[in-house]
Amino acid sequence: MTRFAARRLLHALLVLWLVATLVFVFVHLSPVPVERIIGGPRATAETLERIRANLGLDRPFAVQYWRFIERLLHGDLGDSYISGTPVTTLIAARLPTTLWLVIGGGALWFAGGVALGVLSAARARSLWDRAATVIVLAGLSTPPFVMALALLYLFATRLGDSGVHVFEAGPPLQENFLRRMTLPWIALAFLMLATYTRLTRAAMLDVLGEDYVRTARAKGLPERRVVGRHGLRSALTPVVTQFGIDLGALIGSTIVTEKVFGLQGVGQLVHRSIAAGDTPVIIGVTLLVTLCVIVANLLVDICYSFLDPRVRLA
Image (cartoon, rainbow, N blue to C red):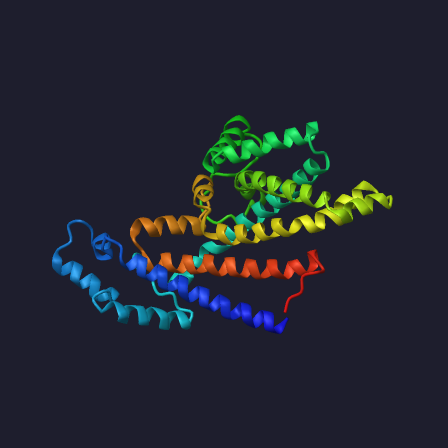
């Protein structure tokens, strides 16, 4: 286990360095100069040169890169070009909102997708299976912003007296937490639920055709125990793998949901930073998403040893 952890730590550091380098290079090769975005279209040449000097953009590229890596090793992501606020402060202020959004939505789509997938596989070609297929097709065909706007229209216009609280801007963790987050969770989970239903159903159908499952049935075990203990446990391996990847990647990919419901999360921060050409914030959020994906994959590897006894971490 120690060797496994050390190897994964080295791998994580290598991936973070590669991602940081690539993002730094791509962002600094942007055809739109940062000083022009900050100074505006009417800025004089002297003003633009002063902005470049203040931001350190007049120095050679190698010097800028070395300073970036040096700050990164000390946990410093730099300051925002637009507001002058440290990037870590900006991310820390918005990260809790996005984490609650992703965790709550993830719990919904994982539990719902696995339940629908198991029932569909256990009752293949039945009326229930066909109904689940319709749900899957609807989820895969509905863009997230359409689902979010439809929920807003339903609860705010048609059911305006239902007490659902969705319009206040700002972080959702201060008051009316469940009311504010229920609709964003549903909107985020609907598309992913369809994907996980299909993935679980396919994995369960493969597992239920294995010899050890037929042996368990031949021994007279109840069908619920065969499906739940012998089938689901093996079928969850690819589902858990996908779940870890999706959770990590969604940290910086919830722009649509946050925009529609007025949640001030990391997605909104990414959107504004890209529009303003705020390079340090873009790099900081990218590294955050990379770190989340790495941690999620590490947790998935650990879960493998519990789901499948044949897996050993060494």
